[in-house]
Amino acid sequence: MRKRGLLRLWFAPAPPEEAERAVGLWLLLCAGLVGLMVIIGGLTRLTNSGLSMVEWKPLTGFIPPLGEAEWMDLFEKYKQFPEYQRVNGGMDLEGFKGIFWLEFLHRVLGRVIGLAFALPFLAFLVSRRIPLISAPRYGVLFLLGGLQGLLGWYMVKSGLVNRPDVSHLRLAAHMGLAVVILSALFTHALAHLSPRAPLTRRHSLGGLPIALALIAVTLTLGAFVAGTDAGLMYNTFPLMNGQLIPDGILTLDPWWLNAVENIITIQFLHRWMAIVTVTVVVAVGLRLLRDGPPAAQIPARFMIAAVLVQATLGIATLVLVVPIPLASAHQTGAIVLVTLTLWTAWECHRPPAHFLEKVTPLSEGFMAKD
Image (cartoon, rainbow, N blue to C red; front, side):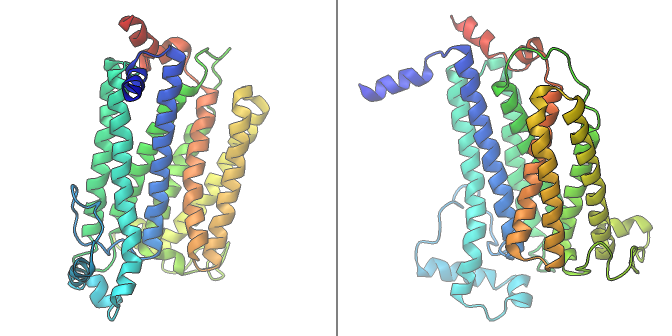
């Protein structure tokens, strides 16, 4: 009886305000899990763990090795690929286990996120906490998550051929799609959790779109830096070994290839794009503190603090020659900065109530059921 009562409670129609909050918190949880996935993915790169699993098993890949024979089988397979042959030759089984578990956790978390999204979504759909008219948008988010898994394996495959390193271009695409998914989940959550009343007036976004674009470019260049190990050279700031513009910055032909293949140029672009980004974000944040709506004051303050901390972490990571804790904190800071900038933009230009009802018509679905 108790279980039946709990099921009835779950699938029973909820008041619109409770339905909004439940869906918003679920989306926020999913966004947090995606953020954690990005952080763990960064750690797999920093610890050179990402190529330890040389097979992709979408259906059974969540099952860990269950005995010594299975461990030895996985280890023998790993030995057939360039990372072991050129980098980790002589590694024993215990060393292999050390790099295996982090990548295994990364892949299992991807499956957990899929379940954490799909199962509550179906329950919300059945209970009409999410109206049927809104289902396609959530379906697109789910498909993007599946595409992210495929893109992750496509990235790993690039390190299993000739070079014991994944393609930095595929790495950037993999990370970029994760940030897109996180941003979509977070903004959908805000649509459910923010007050439904419209702003007294819709404030201009000012430079926030420019700030977001600069953050996106800087993030992409950061993935290039991580994927090419460009952070291990020129470990001085602000000059690069005493030069404002280092030698060798335009050695590749055609010239534009330097931005994606020349590690000197990649580091140069990342550090100076970061400086531009910090300047713009701080300027936009200060303007909002002066002229923005009251609701944007708190996220704007956090945004300014986050970009300054992020810059400090980046410089420290560079001059200390990429210690793993600092580098991971720097990658985490990028995710925090993206979400805070999106939050600030939402509070400045939140759509009025009638728009929200069209995008997430939970109250309409509730009333229709009655």
